[in-house]
Amino acid sequence: MTRSEFVELIEDKTKKELESWQNLKDTKISVIRLPLQGKSLYIIEADYADRTVSVNLSKYYNLYENEITNTSSTPNSGISFLDVIATQIASEIQEKLTEPDELTEDDISDMRSDILGSTVIGIVNKDHPIAKHDFLIYKDIYDMRFIYYSDYTDLGLPVIDTARRKEELKQYSIPFSELDAEALKNTEQTHPACITQSEKHGYTVCHITSGNEPFGAAALFYPDTLNKISHMLSGSFFLLPYNTHEFYAIGFTKEGRETLKKSLKKAIFEINQKMCESHMQDMILSENIYVYDSEEGNLQAV
Image (cartoon, rainbow, N blue to C red; front, side, top):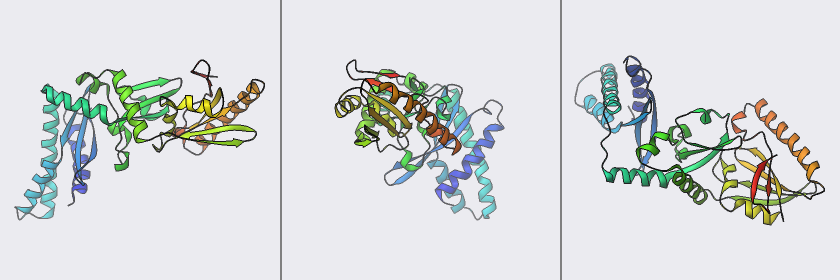
């Protein structure tokens, strides 16, 4: 049995085992796969109440392999041995959930550095499924919501599995303002903004995104993006949140402002409606259009 096959089976058996334990039946578990020297490290993460604990599956896979290698059992008895392992994992989860963590100052320092150095920002609408978990860390901008996570999406990990939790900030004494600043810096360094200018229907338009699909629209909020666009468009501009991956900025004249605003309000309604019809509602970023005042340096919904 391969390591990935073992992980898939043991995840299912551990969930069933926890459901049979009265004090752990509400525990939510998920498997996280992390890169480690060209291989994969599998971890079971368990959430219960306001606590999150992790169990490294490597030792349990080695235990399983040794059992199969050192016995003359049939394959079926080898598979049943997974039930024993699932019970052991559940016991480790219970022990970690019920006993206080004993972290040294070096442990805390290392974890702080890892969290601050690996966290990036995504952006979604407040109605997005991931935006409805109260235990996660958020920052709201009108009806848009920043989410904070470690970027392991290239490994096929869903963002929810690496999203930053409020408990982490508390446990490692990290102020939200520090996490926010570092995550924004990490995101810009890893996924630089891409701003392209064109002429459409008589308007000068800028397209804003980054390579961080599907959260490229977050590039709009990098420290200097709005200022760069105001120089490219020679003044104030409207912003059309096309989806979670891209914004459009459209320059306007004083005389044409109201006409353009009405047109964009109609456009955002139609864009969002089409995404709903196409079952792509998770890509909807906002129901508003926005205006950036280049003289005041502020962003407002209109």
